View 1 (cartoon, rainbow, N blue to C red):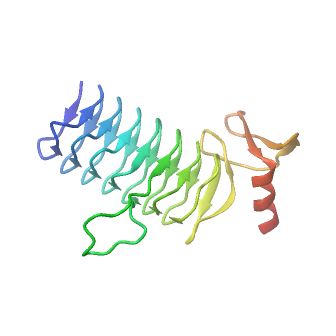
View 2 (view 1 turned 90 degrees about the vertical axis):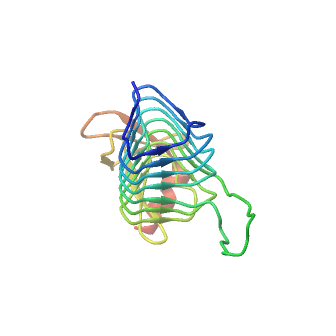
Length: 195
């Protein structure tokens, strides 16, 4: 069953999956696709043609603009923002939308800004207030302005360390859930050099 708060503005042309909840004063524009079991918080703005997967949690005050695709199991923290125009001008009526992809299981923390034209990798963790201007590798932990990779996280969200090189990858065992996380050595090496 879909639950839409009476103050939410949901286009009749939007497609909403079963079990999704859309809270007060959220706006969901036309031709938007939202999967099942999602939670769309208060004051969220979802632009036209946006695609959102299943079990996505979008916290209060988030803006998701045209050109953004959010895969399954993504968390978008309060007041984070996506963009879609690298060179905005008030007098330009048409602009080239730069697409942004947020892959499965990624988390974007409160107040982070995703500058358009990037991909956030699977299970990556974007720190609070980060300004992301380039692609984020899978399982990467990024912070700052501009955002930089400072480490890696497990699928469960815990930071991992003490990896072992296995072929072209570095493999980490999570101390919390015991699951193994694999990161390409070429990416791990760049982070290690900055320490």
